[in-house]
Length: 141
Image 1 (cartoon, rainbow, N blue to C red):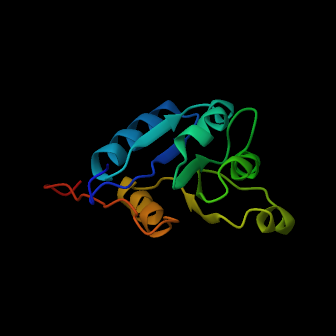
Image 2 (cartoon, one colour):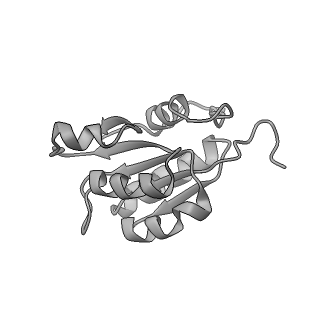
């Protein structure tokens, strides 16, 4: 049984940029009291979502083969009680209808982005009563 300081649901990060995936993945693992799964391919992430049952999924918008909105539209069919965050360094092309079909999308955050801002946003939009705790570093980063 997880300790009271450890969320029972993990966070999923999907980004095709290796530097973003590795750095944010490591920082979130270090500073959040939950498991963090990372995927560089949205199709691979979709195959694992039911088994993982994440509280929050953070995805890049611009990825080869499937943009973040299309990924989230498919992901919400597998994990309907999960909340979503899109991160992007460029423009996001969407229609009002697309956003209406994604009620669990809690925000679109712009890169460059500090890991702490991303972690705080994910925790504040956790769908359960037991969100992960943000463990602050001993020395400011």
